Length: 502
Image (cartoon, one colour):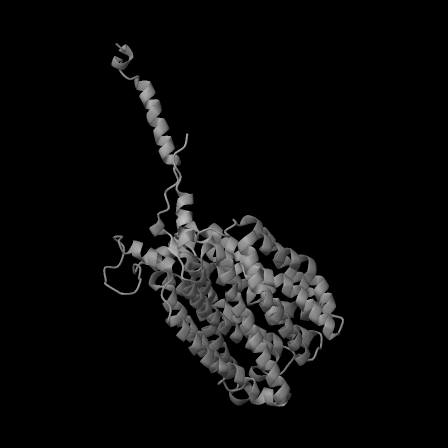
C-alpha cells in the first residue's frame, strides 16, 4: 500500500506551482490569428499609392511653380525695389504659417471620417488656390489689392496642404505590406520630384519660347492655370479608392464602443467627439514622439526646400547665373533623384530606416559647404555636380521619410499626430528656409551662409535619427500585421504562436 498517495498535498508546494503556472501563462505572447492579419492586394496597393502620389505631385507642382517664378512673381505683385525677391519669398513663407492650423483641422477629421474624404477635400482646395493665383491682376493694375489677393490664395493653399502630406503618407503606409512599406512610401516622394520637375520643365519651356517680356506680362499665369485640371485628375483617382484596411478595422472596433456613433452608415466613421479627445491624447501622450517628428521634419524640410525651392532663385539672383541654365541643371538633378528613389525605398526596407536616414543627414553636414563652393565657380558643370551631390544626400531622406513618419504614431491618432508634427516643423523651418537664406545672403554678403544654415539643420536631424526606434519590416503601431500573400500570413501566424516554456 502506497501511503504517499494518502498524504495531503503540501499547501506551500501548491502555491509554488500556481505561481509558476501563472508566470508561464503571462509569458505567452498572444497568438496572432490568421483573421487578424491583413493580406494586401497588389493592384489595390498600387492604385492607392498612385492616387496619393498624384496628389503630392500636384502639391509640389504648385509650390515648384511659385519657387521657379519667384523673381517674376516679385516683379508682378510687389512694388519696385531691391526687396521684391524677399517679398516674394515672404508671401511663399506666409502660407506655411497656417499649415499647422490645417493639420489641427484636417488631421483629427481624417482620423474620424476617413483618410479618403479628407484627401479629396485638400486636393480641391489646393487646386482652386493655384488656379486663382493665375487670375489675379498685377500690382500695376490694382495696386495693393494684388499682393493681398496673392496672400489669400497662398493661405488657402497652405491650409489645405496642412492635411495633405500627413494624410497621403498615412494612406500609403496603411495600405502597404509591412516588409515593403519603404518601397511604396518612396512613390509619395517620387510624386514630389515629379511635381517639381514638371514645374521646372514648364517654366523652362515658357522662358525659352516666350522671352522675359511676355513672361512678365502674361506667360507666368499659364503654369498656375494648368494646376486646376491636374487637381481634378488627382481628385478622381482618390475618390475611386476604398478606405485603408487599418482605418476600417479601427472604425469597426470603435463602432462597438459606447462612444461610437449609433448612426447607420455604409462608410467607416468614428465617434463625433473623436477630434476633441484625439487632440488631448496627442498632446498629453504623444508629445515626446511629436518632438521627435518635428526634429526629423525640420532637418528634412530645410534641406529639401533649400535644394528644390530656394536654389533656382539663389543661383539666379545671388550668383548671377542665367535662369535657363540653372533650370536645366535642376531638372537633371531631380530626374537623377527620381530614377534612384525607389531603390532607396527598397534599401530602407532591407537594411532599416535609420541607416539610410543617417547617411543623408551626415552627407548634408559634410558636403553642403563643398557643394556651395562649387556653385561659386561660375560654370554649368560645377553647378550640376554640386546639385547632384546635394541630391544624393536628399534622396536618402526623400526615399525613407514617408515610411518613417507614419510609423511613429498609433493608428487611432496617426493622421492627426503626423499632420500636426509635420506642419509645425514645416511652418517654422521649411517654408521659412528660402526667406531666411535670402536674408542671410543679403545681410552678411556671404554666399555660403545658406550652406551653414542647412548643415546646422542636418545636425538636428542626426540627433533625431539617433533617438528614433527602427520600424522597418514591422507592423504599424495599433494596426494588425500586413503581408503580401496568404502564404506569408500563414507563416507569420505560425511563427508568432509560442507554446509555454519553462
